[in-house]
Image (cartoon, rainbow, N blue to C red):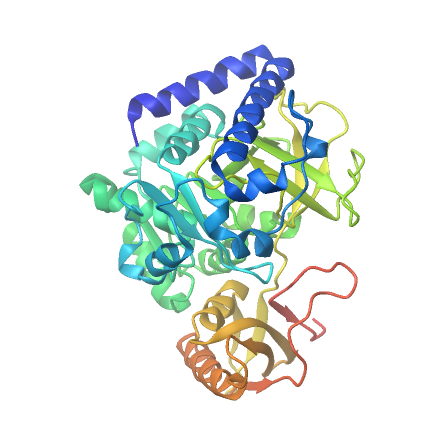
Amino acid sequence: MSKLSTLAVAWECRRLDRGGREAIVARQQERLAELVAYARSHSRYYARKYLHLPDGPVDLAQLPPVTKPEMMAHFDEWVTDPAITREKAEAFAHDLAQIGRTFLEKYLLFTTSGSSGAPAILVHDASLEDVLAGTSLARGPYGGGDLWKIMKNGKRMAGVYATGGHYLGYSLTERLRKSNPLQARSSRIFSILDPVPQLVENLNRFKPAMLGGYPTALVLLADEQRAGRLRIDPAIITCGGEWTSPEMRAELHAAWPEARITSTYGCSEVGNMGFECEHGWMHINEDYVILEPVEADGSPTPTGKLSYSCLVTNLTNKVQPIIRYELGDRILVKESPCACGSPMMAVKIEGRTDETLTLTGADGATRRILPLGLFAVGKETPGMGRFQVIQTAPDRLVMRLEAKETGQEEAVFAEAQRRLSAYLLAQGLQGVSIERAAEAPQPHPQSGKFKHVWSEVKR
């Protein structure tokens, strides 16, 4: 990452913001035309898919949408550098020692968690780091008072995320830590799989000035802060990766009344797509990304209505072009200009909605268990395909699963059961029943979304 390039991105963002919506849309369309032209000439997949499209100005609505399974099935044709192959990418992704290092000595590679039921491998060029840092510098929700408190507390940044793969936040943090000794001391990612007492002890020792994480994990930490076991004083708390409900936000404010509580919106396919303003709306970086709310039939969702899904276009990644790619999040676009004054599109997002479970062990101990903790354990089980974990009683979990190889379901479940039991035991829970369901994993019958973890126990 170049300081000069980061500042250039930040300067252009500020210039476009001052120019208003007309300037932002003009830059967006310029980048879209460049991206589509490059994809047609360098990606065999897009050359074939766009073969019958007319030349001239790009009409986004004429470009056919794409899905994650479809793109992964054509990975070698999708990428624009023939040196990149799915075989090489998968070998790199499976090697956890490579987390934070460059792929083929010049690219950034990330994997998705598969929260929609299908994981993916994403490749970006190194300019992504400058875009992420530059947009954050220009549009991030940091005031002068926040920056002073961050500096006074040693600029230490802690994230509470999944660490078992080449995930965007974890990989970029490890990349900074490996390239900069100062970053290695001031930036750390803590695993959501760590037992809560260990996590609390580590955070107390680290004393972060900035705390980020999945809101379900942060709410659990808020309980520890209010109980007096966790004793940290972050200036900024940033939620990401899941939907932050008003109830979650209230719990965070109760635990840290002096902290700025905010959210970002991002994904491995694009990076950081937007920042939350003081009025609670997420403003999309429209000069770098196009976000389209759509109905189940693919038609545009009217402004002011919650969409069935959304399509995303990454305007800067030409290594693996993302053009009208189905993201799956449900979004609502604000009908009127935002009171904060931003000229960019303002949205509310309903993303991942897996539930935090409250489980009771054989000794009567009750613990709140993070959905992404259960998901990470299941995903890391050898041979595991798609799966779902459902709480059906205070002390009972049921797992639906598919094995990657036919006929291996029993063996995969036995290993998953062993790993889940060990994880729950580390969280202070023993004797929780983990059983295999007769049915295979399935999407929600109404929304069509693929949830991994939820409870059927009345609260």
